[in-house]
Picture 1 (cartoon, rainbow, N blue to C red):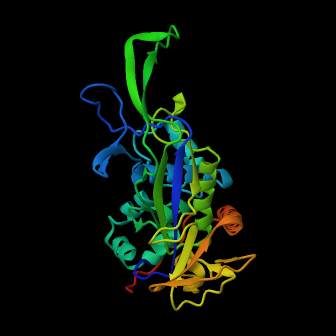
Picture 2 (picture 1 turned 180 degrees about the vertical axis):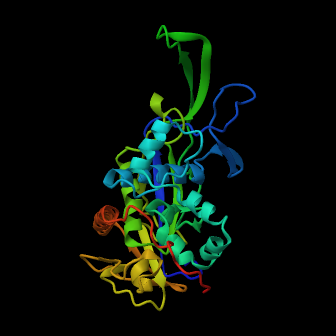
Picture 3 (picture 1 turned 90 degrees about the vertical axis):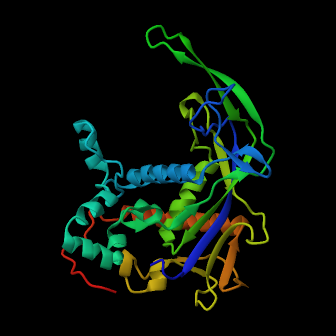
Length: 339
């Protein structure tokens, strides 16, 4: 599926701290605070940043909760293991599928199934749960890439004192004081989000997370139970030399996608392969014109056009999740073949 490009989406997400933020570096400083932000060397100096892997993990975890709230047994539980308590296993099995990656790894132990997985990647994608389709698993690469979020404003740090609480007295525990260095309120980071060969409901899935970040419902980093990690986010409308501002959707230059529609992967394939549907289309209330750039045709959504796109895509996401099958079936009794 990724051997050719049919559609893409891109945006720059501006993340603004509305409270102190700490993405821990994992080690204490030589002198000073016990907990410090993760740093990178950029613009000739060390500065705080938010790793793209951290953002991707937060996005995926939040989406899993959203989908599980819409319909049980649609998303998989990727961290199942032998150390789980039986009560946890029972609860998980009521709400989640078995891990997609774990299921594919188990199938790969059998020669016949391993060849099937290698030859029928379309069925692997079709049998993957919604979050694995977007973020990937050990059986299939994901659709989405999220870059490290770098500073887009002046960096301001502050030090805070922390103390361990004695569980018996409810007071400060003797000798349990520690210091934190955090990024202050009002600091702006920017990250780039790139989506390849997407289905329309995957746009809605992404917009749902961005909406919750905008509404300050998602916290980042360490100390979230202590009030750290409060952020808000918005899609940047500032253009650059490489990209127009807003939410940018592109297709190949010779594509036949009309200006009043956005075609998802299913419409581009138009053959129901990969578990997609040919009616994977979002109709636009107002046409948005293309502009040619290299081999691509791009459309930038800003203002009311972006609000409408977000609303319609989220609606399709909700409908798709509520109609999603609770058990994978594509790989069952499928004959192995080569492409």
